[in-house]
Length: 496
Image 1 (cartoon, rainbow, N blue to C red):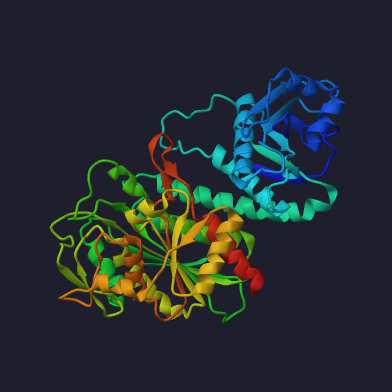
Image 2 (cartoon, rainbow, N blue to C red):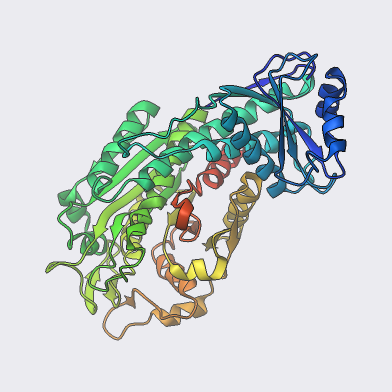
């Protein structure tokens, strides 16, 4: 999908489809009024006739309007004027893209950036339009023998703004296009089945991204991981025939010697639960247990494309969690890279076992901040559903940065408390800690576990178990939290 920015009067602009808004009570936006006047009042006539009432997400397509240079006009309902919220705007863009795609038009021009959306600025509206369009048009059909190509795909969208807004709009468009490409990468990796997207495959994709983006990369093999003493990580991997990989990516866009931000992504390419086997229903979705890794990989690609002025390290521990005669057993005790011992009371709490060694490895970079991203706990889905990601941190300023990045990008998170009191639930009679703390506060105790390995730097944890993919009829990866991470990194870049 190609996006461009232009500033042209609606009645003079040549396009296959002009997209403009209409509020409830059948009130046209300024661009729609200009189109209506040039077309001899055809839109007003249709509205009076009741063809469109302006309800949010409704659409009305007008073919071959006389007096205009556009082949079609698409009116999109926005809801009540002065009450258009973030979701209303995104829904309007999605509805418009879906409707235009249904016409077979290969390009369209949108005037929806003129719509007032609360206190949101032009850059937000441009970015959300690009991301909503990317989400609507995304398809994963590469493993199907027949593709769904009934009509020509919409390939180009021009976002129309006023003359004084082009520079702001172009910057927002460039950022959002990089985010969409990164999200699509993360979605593609998540949607691949576990028999294709293995740890080795994930490492190969990371190498391809690094080569294309000019990133430095090192893939540590099992022998390298053993030399590092990552006993906790290796204990999860030993139940599988697939060898583990530890991917280290580096981006140097900041000053030489400047401390980097480190991103850590959980890369369990399939999670059966191990000996603590998961129920069979919906176990196929455990191919998405590497979405944290996919989001880190996508974010590394995006920040390189945008040329952000900071140094970033991406760490991805990746393996499978399967039952076998070699697999972890409940009650086993393993030794982490930090030297701390862990009693494995539940082999399905494996994400924290690979992340803890990665967090210890992060110390060698002397990071300014570390953010780990993981589909970690079902408890987070129960607490927050599928709307926002969970956030816990040992530094409130870092947490605020991530919360603000979530609000700015529309990829929101919500902070949960990380109090020392929760550490009591991780006590073990036989090791330094247990890997689970029982049913109460499961998301928090998982983070409390990780915090024991992140004491030497500012650290935050994003639990994306409820937001990384969708189930049911619309099953598929979401690409989250790539937008949040890119905004977080961009904010750091601007402040450097």
